[in-house]
Length: 169
Image (cartoon, rainbow, N blue to C red; front, top):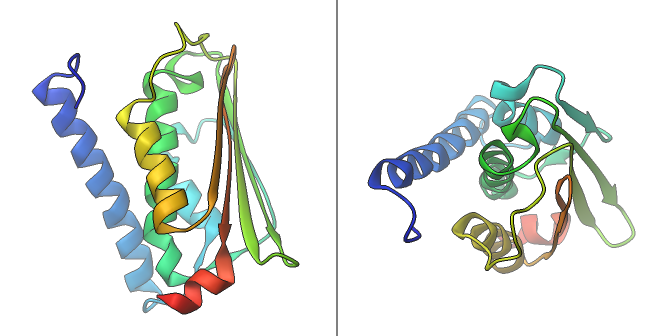
């Protein structure tokens, strides 16, 4: 919680994160804790924005069950940030999300690109959501994070070891 956040905003943010994890848990439960299609997981988090403003592209990838909840929380944080500060905070903004599995390195790469959003007001310290994204990807999933704020919104690339990590949980 930053100095500018109200208790209500903080509570809403926590509730949103819990709901994202609950959706992921529900998908895992439906599939008896087996793999979940990555596209379905992303679509579940994007449901409020299913009005053509978000483009998804990528091959079918079965996400190992151990990665489902962290990836759901990653997508939730990106969506929440875009809705509050980025491309989904105005009518013109768009988001594209694409993914691929690099079979040689056994890594899942997810790319997030916002266009048409308001320009960042100023370069400032990363907020809690950005720090949480980095912690999820780099610490929990042992991956890499690249976040760049462009005039039209956030551009991010997230790479996580998909198979090796799944076998370690």
